[in-house]
Image (cartoon, rainbow, N blue to C red; front, side):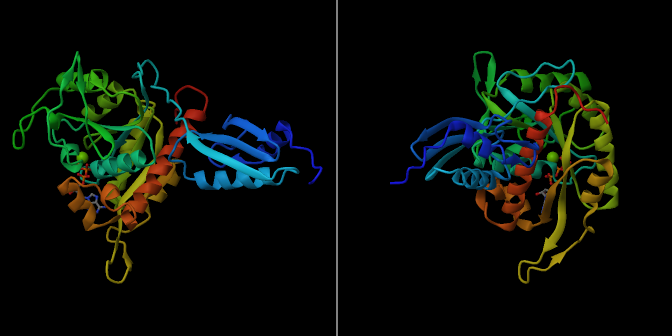
Amino acid sequence: MSNDAAPREQDILDALKKVEDPDLHKDIVALNFIKNLEIDAGVVSFTIELTTPACPVKNEMERWAREAVLAVPGVSDVRITMSAAVTRGTAGEGKQSVPGVKNIVAVGSGKGGVGKSTVTVNIAVALAQTGAAVGILDADIYGPNVPLMMGIDGRPRAAGDRIQTLSNYGVRVMSMGFLTDRDDQPLIWRGPMLHSVIQQFIRQVDWGELDYLLVDLPPGTGDVQLSLTQTVPLMGAVIVSTPQDVALQDARKAIAMFRQVHVEILGIVENMSYFQCPKCGERTPIFSHGGGAATASRYGVPFLGEVPLDVSLREGGDAGKPVTALAPDSAVGEAFRQIAQQVAAQVSIANSHSVGVVIE
Ligand SMILES: Nc1ncnc2c1ncn2[C@@H]1O[C@H](COP(=O)(O)OP(=O)(O)OP(=O)(O)O)[C@@H](O)[C@H]1O
Ligand SMILES: [Mg+2]
């Protein structure tokens, strides 16, 4: 029997102060991540409550905390429970937030067809797989693709004065595609009607409690997109681009548009980054490569990662089976998991900044 005294709470907290969150640049005690600390003889147990279940360094933080506490004299065992409480973003000046919805994030691009909807759907599914509560608002009123990509075919029900979402893969969805007659009929609406629809999608849909509500924007940076970004209480925006120069020029326009309305840019995703030969594994940069990262650094915004050109993404999109749901361990599934983690980390970072809007 050793006559080591049982460790004191302060000794444990002092040890845990050496563990820093690499994204928030503060120690995990100062960040108030440590909950339910108990010391029973040499056995120390506590919960680490992160700001997102999709934290990219979750496993490392657990390991660092364990090592730090084990180094305290008298500690024989460490029992850690990992949990998360997603932080709430600010809705932007003069905008009313949506009760229950913590973070509304737009996914936009300047150019059409670069993969916004594909990226939105796969990030949403990847976030939901971490245990986060996730929704998608399909703001592409004229060409809603999310129902097809999410494999949802149905009509939402009303409950009281609220419209219910439809769900698949653990993600709640609302789209004009649920409300119009299928296929061919293009909707011709004027701006004010479009905004009232988006307002209703935001305010009159029963989103429940959501950590992340992703908004799949229509392509472009014109008046429609600009006022959509003003209609929706966004905490941030993700920009999708392909690596070509033309697409990147449009990504710059999208950055400028969000900055104009004081929406923080969470980062850039480069889609169709390269083609990986399924036989030999060789990577071919069909549309050149690295432009997304270069643009991100030039504009001082985070680079969130790259998605390869992969036929399974198109097939999965057309069949309503997102790759992240169907093949989460494939190279593309892994790419999306990492991007989803980066998005979640950037949301946490933005929310940790002092309240207020970020202007260039
Ligand atoms: N990385 C990829 N590899 C292969 N196909 C892809 C990839 N990303 C997107 N696609 C395909 O490219 C097409 C366009 O993608 P998507 O609809 O997601 O783009 P978008 O930016 O939302 O388009 P729009 O501007 O019309 O809303 C779809 O058929 C999709 O399946
Ligand atoms: Mg789209």
